[in-house]
Image (cartoon, rainbow, N blue to C red; front, top):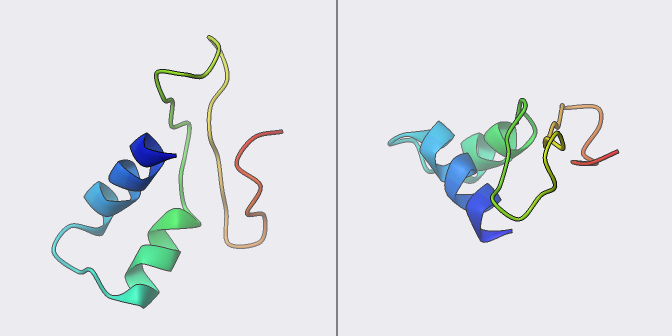
Length: 53
């Protein structure tokens, strides 16, 4: 979870408002963490918050 949170904060840049953090958390595309099995990626969208299917 920490690696995902770091990615969200990177995507935010200097705009660390709640609105932007939520927007970035809902827009992860093909993000991989070191503890996921090969081939598994995290994807979220504004209408689907489930990161892994």
